[in-house]
Length: 572
Image (cartoon, rainbow, N blue to C red; front, side, top):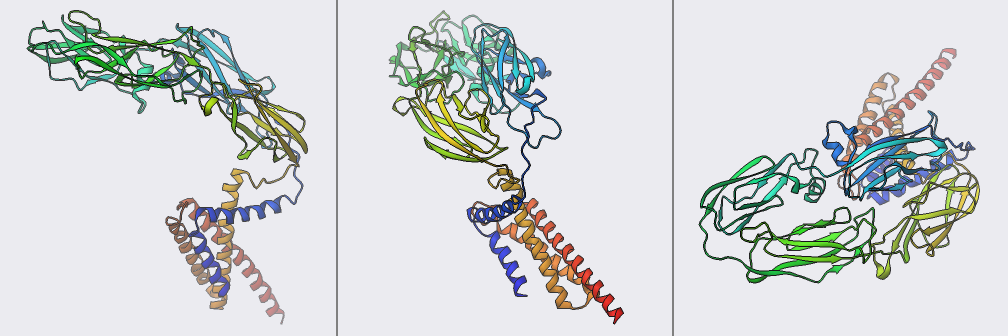
């Protein structure tokens, strides 16, 4: 009775433990299981090479908008991410990481570049040209397997589905009004920047009456000579009506546009927009300043992108093309208002931005697998496993706008541990056999910047207790299963002794199984109150399965004992 009560109490208390304490207990159980499994010799891992390579998915935005995703179109100035998959033979449990993964252009190439990450089998196609182009790339895996991918770089299309919102019902002659052109996205929520980047709003056909000027980016200007009354205009074939009221004097006396000092730096970076970029503000100069905003124009989307390209505050980031002070990025700000009787903006200003190639000058951190290392640190692994290497760089003055974060990784003993893949952001190491190897990590952008660490490879094991799949799928599940198996078995023994009558075995099973089921649901419910834990129906099922196994084990032993006793009684 005491043992059964102790087991039930332990089960309830364990479910109320915080997640970190429970994980420690789970790790202990897992380490015991791993130790037992590794008492037996492990089979030597045999490298299994891929038999093929295929495209798994493409993130090209336009593909999702087409009925035929195989159209493979990439807009000028945008990026598409391709994810590939390697095919292995049917029995590939002991598969080493791929030894190489690269991509190269076999057709076209003037207007795009490739960024390859061998560790994740991802290829980014970055369009930076100024003309349409038919393109094809070849992607290579280990042992000569390869595939090709064809696509077209095309101009940004005009939006097909859109609505005009926030247009005033009446506009005074000689003044301007703003509106919102909302592009409707059929494949899910997208930011205004993403939609305007993939769709060319300025390509929409505009039809308007004389004296009425419409800018599809969001402004309407009515000349003072327009007759008051009902008027209309059309954008992309859609008509909109509004009333024009009589002009009342001169409303705008704008002398120009004032720009604030540019803050930040425009870093050269051909594959990432993570850097902070530059910020500045703009405002009208004059005696009567209008409320209508400014438009940021002539921003080359194939070089950079703008955040909130209208209003009074601007942010530009992500210079994606080789540039220098002789090749600046010119930004033109224009008023939403037009000069009387013309299509020219009432005021404009030009700003020239130059890129800065931020080279890495220091190493912020180094990680091998999940372990942080310092220069000269040591990493331990088992033969047949692998781990990724990641390095974080900093530029001058602690800047994170590092242009090229890719690394070169070299092993002093490839027979023991070798590098999987070409230089990339996160290459992998495959561990082959017992021994040691020194790895040197070098920045590709700044070869003088390097760090090294030693790898100590031990023999292959049946179970790696540090493996994440083992930690989740075995440590936790086996722990729950074994705990409830013990609870079900010891409970059945208690009730069998309590009733003392073999003919009441059904009561033994009912009471023991019922209490185990109550505890299975109760312990999961309690986890809603425990920090960093939560209930799971899967865990309830595992608990019930464990109790069922315990009951079966008890009934089997109990039946054998009764059989032996029955035979002895007959002989006596």
